[in-house]
Image (cartoon, rainbow, N blue to C red; front, side):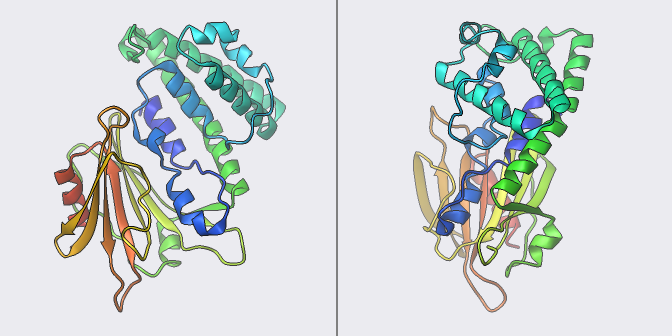
Length: 306
């Protein structure tokens, strides 16, 4: 599994601040935002910023010079396309990691980030694309070792974020025991895609826990597809991502909304299917998003309704 997939999996667990409570559902859903859907292969900055986004987005704590240890200076970072704002944000994230990890752990984490940066610079072509083929066989092996070593740090930082934000990760079995509809698994998956992660996410702050939402990720090379299932009364109450074009229609006997990708801003389409309340279950939705055409999204959705 390459770095983009590792980071995308970790980014799946990113969450924003979840106040006020009525917006909890929307905030949890937004943790799978455009950054986590889009393959991170455009330029070095995108990958490095995505990595540090595993840590909570707090107000900037001031320039700590930690980023200089990675890049040497702001000027050197600018040479690979990093803006002033991105550099400051990156520095802030490293500072937050320093506060989370122990002294020895943070020192090792910084060395791994340096190694990661080194290999990304070597892989970049003139268009800012990552070309792994530019590395020798030995370098590719070393690169994969760095990825394997840094992943536990990403996981730990992310777990700390989840706890701080009042989010709890549940197994599918645990999530099923806390919701009033049956979790469905697709009977149809596009060729090449394989199951990567499946979990429940629950907001645990306040007097009453909210019903968990189920998130499932499938991957195929640099491509990723997410399926979300959560309680929702109104089809038009909320669609997790913004789309340039949205179309509401009937998909079989169910109301649905199809969101079409923007030509310039994103690479994914989304389909939201509303399942109304009946005697057996509460109203809920199935939301599918990925780099797939409408027909494929519909096949996946319909296979979950059989």
